Image 1: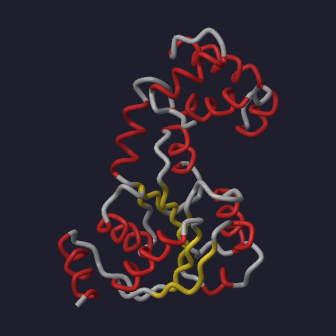
Image 2 (image 1 turned 120 degrees about the vertical axis):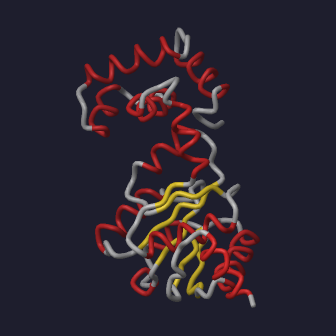
Image 3 (image 1 turned 45 degrees about the vertical axis):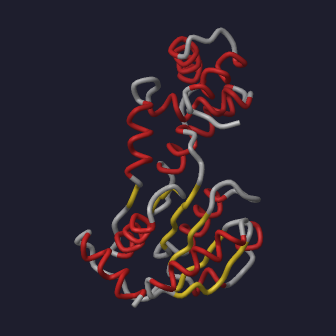
Length: 219
């Protein structure tokens, strides 16, 4: 019955039901993993392994057996670096970030990475199933809520300024930011000036306060 319900949900969305997938979960909340496992099993998939951080995942051969990996974002290790490494070794592996993060700068960074799908934990189960089905067909998926948040933020900061913002707030040196984003230090200087001006901030502490108020970053 559960599989039939999942099929009905996807049929209603005009999405083809994917074949059974072997899925690995990486999330540091056991209760959430248990609930997610029940959902995935009801949709006809198999959860073959669970991890509570990225560090131990990278040391396991389970990656070779998994068709898809679903990551939380805020947990021990660096999920985006882990996904990048997996994709470089196994390009066919599908990776979803399923997160409770709401900060626009973070969502923008995740969405601009090599992930196949970005879904929020506040999304419906149908939207997660939709993401799984679409990326199984080789497509990419970004939650509508995420796109709404990102598009609204463009009225405040450009996409590049959203990339630079977290580095400024963390106090990262201009040369290092330039190296990470593959742009010149003069360009970083210009972005810094424009970001401060747009957020009506005189210094980094004021910038941080304004960014928090606008939901661009999290505590």
